[in-house]
Image (cartoon, rainbow, N blue to C red):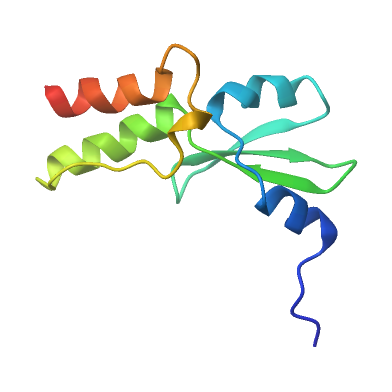
Length: 99
């Protein structure tokens, strides 16, 4: 059995794609989908077979609401540089937790 990822998976796995880039991909053959169980968006290009998972303001609002509802201590980001120039993602988290 070959446990090595395909070159497509390795290429995407090595990069960080944030919500600011999602709009760019939508015009390049990608379709946005919503995972109703994980409550996150994802993009898929059927022609290339490339899948991109990411967070957007909607998914982060849901996660932030969960933090508040469960009275957790806060939130953390793995990769803040993938936010938009106007801090769209950080703003959603901040505004929800500050309420």
